[in-house]
Length: 299
Length: 241
Image (cartoon, rainbow over all chains, first blue to last red; front, side):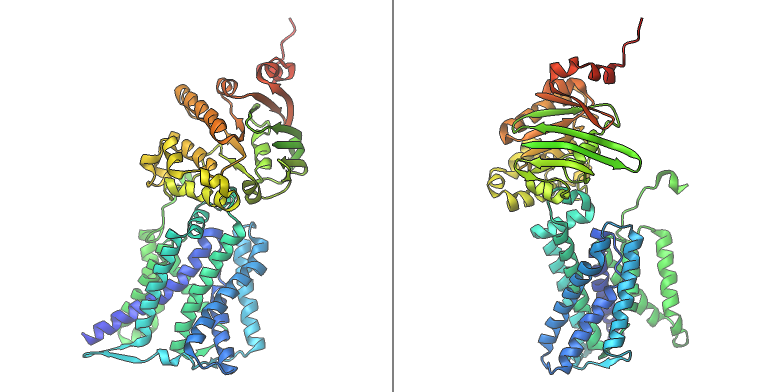
């Protein structure tokens, strides 16, 4: 029972982290049609901000958390202003290549200006403790990851459904050109989407730092690839799909870790992708995506 | 109100607009007509900021909107509908109207205060469907919703691109009455593009006829239909006997 509960919590915590990062990708994609592969470097900027602040004498974990979120939101808005705005109306491949370019440049800046080696960050270690509920011992970090992710997604849903700016963002995600004809300022909507995306990356960065206790230049890149897979699995462009896809990916990975004999543990990633491919063959539009009728192109 | 002066636009080697000029006064309904490919929609796109003209100017009241983007044109008071309906299909009917009303509240708070979204929906017989996704409405209801959404912007100039397309005679008559009511209630200038000449003649105070990117005639409806260039475009040149 203890083991099952622990694995369930593992799956939920991993899923919550993937969901946060996938939501960040989906918010931007739904409006701009941009797959922002530099999203991982926003996580990196956030983590390095905490590292630098700690090196300068910051000791408060609460301030570190706020700094991580603020730095990520600021980095995301800066990336948009400097790199993505000039290519906003260019073909989607241009945006994709720009995102890869930003990712490479920022990773190299981390290496040149700080270090190519992982740097220890211990300021958030206090988040990672064991909590005991009767006979059960659970990781405080996983519980917080789950609760904070849930609350963050709830706050995002409320913002999008209740606020004026949220309504403008939802309309822009359906038809950006028409929303501009309604007088809604494109720059404001897109900057807000990037700020939300960055804040989500910042929250994810806090949990990653607390678990790993270190930061390296490629910290977020691998995670963004998984978040991209989560988005595809959930239905690209759908925010609910991104959250659901992230959670499903967490369950698939932890499920395979539990199910596979230890000597086959190395096959976890390969088998994860086999399962995802099988799911996409069965449902190409993803869990919550909408099927697009291609007419005679389907033949 | 609206003054378009010598606007030109070229796509590749095709000159879509050649020094096209027109004007439309507050409270006036202007019909913009011409055969397919005449440049009517291109001109409306230039007025609403969707296209940047290569030359010429677009002014609304005292404001120069030449080359401004669609946001600025909408914020200046230009609202439009489309030949192919462009609603936010997954949003509800009410939310579609609310999106336009955001800008109105922002830049024309007085006008926004006079626009009651519930009343607007009722006026366009959309109140019963206010909370359903716009994409589930019938074609006629979607056309009405596009007009209601444009009005929620509190426009001083309303551009209607083929509003009667796909409507039967009685629906066109109802639409014409609705457009006259817009003039009465909102007092805005209205430009209507349509191929239904009965609808246009019944509705418009003045006509502006385009052919091959040029404005070939403009004036009162009776005068325009007597113009030999208009007769040639619509009827063809009389064959010598």
